[in-house]
Structure formats: C-alpha cells, structure tokens
Amino acid sequence: MSNIRLFHPENIIENTTSLLSKEHTHYVVNVMRLKRGSNINFFNKNGEWLSEIVFLDRDRVEVKFLNKIKQPNKTSNIELAICLVKKSPMETILQKATELGVSKIIPIVSERTEVKELNFERANKIVVEATEQSNQLIPPEISQVIKLKDFLNNLNVSTKLLFADVNSKDNLKKEVLSEAKSLSVLIGPEGDFSPSEIELIHGNPNVVPFTISRNILRSDTAVISAISLVILSITLINCRIN
Image 1: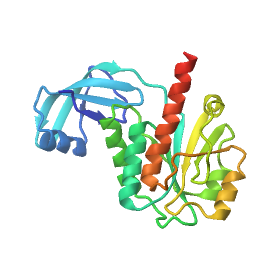
Image 2: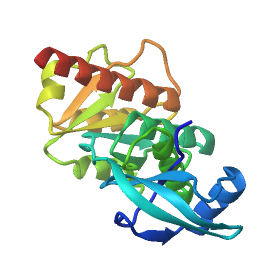
Image 3: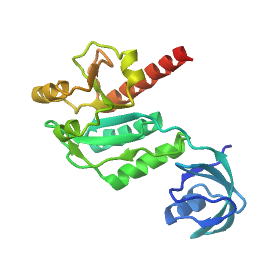
Image 4: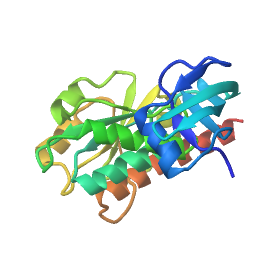
C-alpha cells in the first residue's frame, strides 16, 4: 500500500521536524489512524519528500522529513476558463480539471451564468485534495471571478484561446498546439454563450474554435472532454516529433 500524500505549501528541509496542521492532524489520527513510525509523503511545487511520524497524540502530530523522493515537474501550459455553474457540477469541474493537470482555473461570469460567485475556500480544498489523489505536485491556481469581456480583453497575446464551440466542425490543428506558449480552454455556461458573446469571442485574434462532440454536453462533461482532447492531441504531436 502506498503512503498517503499531503500538500505542504511551506518550505521542506530534510532531517527537520514539523507539527502538522489541525486539519492534517485530524486526518492522520482519526481518518487514516496512522501510528508513530508510519510514513507520509509531503509535496509542494519543489518536489515530494518521505517523512516519518515521530510523535502522535490525539491533537498533536509531529513528523520528520527524511529524504526527497520526487523532483519538481514542468508546469502544464493548459489553463481552463470556465463559466460558473451550480455547486455540484462546479465541484466536479474543479476536481476533474485538476486531475487532468491544468495549471490554472479561471471562473467566468457570462450573460447566461446563473451563479455569480465561487466559494474559494471550498474550491481550493477540492483542488488540493485532487492534487494529492492524482500524484501531482502543484494544485492549479484559481483566479478571481471575472466577466467574459474582461477575460477576453486581458488575455495574454501569447495564449491561444481554444474555444469549445458547439457550432464548430473544426478539429484541433497540430500547428496551433505545437506553436502556442500557453493554451486556455474556454467552456461556456449551461445554455451556451449568447449570440453577442459568441461574436465577441470570435472577434478575439487568438481564438481557435474547435469541436468536442456532435452532442450537446453538460458543462462538467464538456470540460473533461475538451481538456482530454487537448492533452491527447499534444501527446500525439510529441510522439511524432520524438
């Protein structure tokens, strides 16, 4: 059985000890029921370390960081720009986008979004847990909620905006994915963008419309399909290059 993995945002130094947070203490003692001498892996953007529990009580756990077992990875160049949806599908989106390896999640408000706010404390908890589960090192950044128009106006000139357009019949092109420094996958709200918003999106010089299905997909399904398609396309390109 592999060791449990916990995110530790602070700097980790080998052969030093650290007290666990209240949340991690509860998880280790009451959920996982670990004992003194048990091993835990702690990770952050700098890598992953093996640790050992050197003291354990009901409300206090101290670990010793032993040795580094994983070096930091190259950060993904794929971001997700997603129109806010209701709580349950939004939590699925946060979880699955993290598992698939996006580097940033940008919550967007459009004309047809029913939800206008995001619970950032809950959202960050979800992406951290998904990072722990999926054997990654860096939870995606979650940016502040932004209006669609402002998102388009602030889009970096080096970023290709991959628009999952229900009206598009175009597949992703190799040159678009291989030449872009960063990629932002844009997913609309339930009911799609309004005609004026679609016109605004298509007017952006960096937009690349593409199709993910002949069917109309829910937002959470569309996110999984679109990101998976982008990753698969990039993987195939890299295989051909190598």
